[in-house]
Structures are given as structure tokens and as C-alpha cells.
Length: 485
View (cartoon, helix red, strand yellow):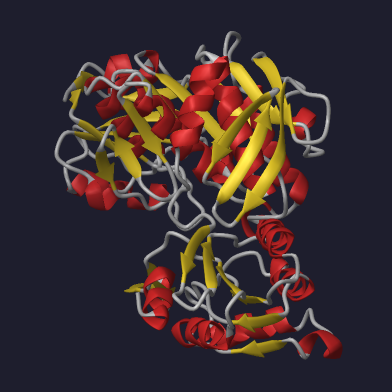
């Protein structure tokens, strides 16, 4: 792939240029370690490091042009330098042009909110494949170009990786792409330059305050996604969330609402439920689905609403809904021969944990005990740790506090932060076991027929990150080992 620098620069606001802009660019990179000869290097002031410090390294590796915010004191001979006001925003626009403006060739739908993004994006991807279309997916669990899996590191990839991925989707005939849009992605301009056909808002609860600092900043990052939707796009928003209408108050998109409780364009209610699934009423029509929990009713309703907004017939969408299956690590049930139900779920925020435990308790109706295994991630928002422990205790009969992904923190210190939120009476329900495998094993051994063991926090993840190193670890494998299945 090759493109003239002149053409690329038309997509950004240039402050100053020195050097040849007619030269050909063979790639774009913002990581100097990945630079190849002929590349354009974009120096971005990141959260971990400032790319301006690595301009020299990028040139040594063969970069022929540099885009930067701060003009370098020394310029290398034969290299073109371009100064812009905001290189973080520029990299997305440059990448979009370089990879052939992929979102002009396919319909991209973004899903944002604290919980439910993965489920909604994945179910839409699966649904539109049922309809016979080639589709792409960008999600926390995995990226897909139709049926080809492309491993993922972040909820929303960096703009270069993202545009390369979307470019491949377009080249391989995908008509639709469904993407989780994280608050980081909006704040860091990772989606700059992309054209969205529609956006979906799920809900908003405390998360990522280690990065955004305040809930208002976090909310505004989500809202900025809807502010940027073009005229003619659709916005589907959850009016059961108090931030639902705030999200769309400045959007140019056509707004559609969904709700389980209020007046809305798309409505649903639960008619019957069990650990095997639910019977729902969706806009006056009945449908049976193998999903559990009112939070999943909300997710399924968002999927239904988006599909109808994309022009599919309501009846066709309901038939497709009934064929879909839960996403890996989202309220996955594993039954022992003795009648113990284990549930693996990605719930790693207080609100998500409450949603899952409320569902378990609603279905169980005190016919058994709820034993919860949970932890909290290291090097993340410490303020939610005691809240996670409090919610687990409030909604469970017994709780085992353990490690999640401690990353660079000491596991016991994270557990201590969680336990600090509990009083003496609450502590009677709680034990702590640092080793996650042992914690899960203990919970499963404690459970009697009819009980439910919830293992929360990691869901689909098949690793545990300790001291920055990822070790293989899978909650499902541990549970199945104890159950002998």
C-alpha cells in the first residue's frame, strides 16, 4: 500500500511543513518500534509515554515523514516534518485516508455505555450474519472479519489498527461492522475520521475513573460519540438510564428510545424466566430466548431496536433473536451432576455485579444459597473496590473475595481495599483467598444441590495478569474440573 503524503495531509489542519510532501508513504505508525522504511511516524503525547521523545528512533528505523505537535529542535536531512495542533486527533484522520476511507464502503454501528457493549455488538454481528450478510466485529472478546478471528488487546483498538481492520473488512466484502466504543476511544480520538451509520447507548455507571477522574468527564466522553453522529444516522438510547436522554440531546442523528419501564419506541417485558432462558414480550410480540436476566432483556431490546432502525422487518428480527446464544463469559451457566449451578460473568463494576446477582436471586427465589466469588482489577479505579465487596455481600449468602487481574499491584492489598468497605456483621459472610483457583474450588465445594456459585470479574478472559505478565487462567476450566465435567 502506498499514498502520497500530500493526499494524506488534506485530512488534517496543518500548522507548519518542512520538506517534500509529494513523497510516497508506505505505512503509518505511532509506535517507533513498529516503524518500517517509508513510514509516516505520528508523534502522540500518550498516557504512558510521549511519542515526540521517539522521533529520532522512528527516523533511524526508516520513517521518511513525521507528524508532530511540538516542532523538534533538530531535523534530520531528507525527512519531511509536519506540525499539527493535535496529533492524537490527526492520527485517526490520516489512517482513515490511508486505508481508503473504509466506513464509506460499509455501515459502521457503534455501541457505548458501561455494561452490555460486548453483548450488543456481538449479537448484532451474529444476527446480520444470520440475515446472510458478511459482517465485521470489533469487541473486547475478539475482532472478526466475517468468520476470521483477529485477536484483540483493547475494547477499541488504536486508530491505525482500527482503520487497517475496517479496511480489510471493506475489502473482503463486509456490508456491516459492529463496534464497541469505549470512553477511552472517544477521549483519545481513536475513532476520529470514522463515519458511523448509527450508535447505541446502553447505560452509565461508575467505571474508568482512574483515567477520567470524574463521573462527569466519563459521561461527557460517551456523549461526545453521539454529538459526532452525522445527520441521517440513527441513535438508539436507553431511557431507563437517567443519562439516556442526556446522551442524545445534541446529536444530529435520528433518536429512538428503548425501555423496560417507561414510554419508549421499543418496549419489552419478561413473561417467564428460568436458568434456561426467558419468554419476552417485545413491542407486543412474544419471543423465547436462551438468555437470563433483566439486563439481558435490555441488551436484546437494544439489538432489536438497532436492527429495525437499520431497515430490517420486525418479524424477521424477532425470529433471528430467538436463534441467538449468549456471548462467551456473559452469564454463562455450568451445571454439575449434583444440581449446583455455576455462573461465569464478566461483571467487574458494582452495577454489573448487582445486575447479575439480582437476576440470580429473582430466579432462585430462596430455594438455594448464592455463593459469590469476586475481586477487583489492579491499577484501576480503587474507589469501586469497597463498593464491589458491599454489593456482593448484600446480594449473596456467602462471599469469597479473591484476585482478579492484580496487574502490578499486590493481590492482598487489593483484597484489603475491598474488605475495608465491610463492617463486622458483613464480614461474617466473607472469607478471602488470594489464589483465584483455590477460591473458585472452595466455592464449588461449599455449594449444595440447588445452590448457585457466581464467579464474577473475568468472564471470557483466559488469563490472569500478575506483575504485568499474563498467565493462562480460565474460570470455566476450574469450575468444570471441580464438577468433573
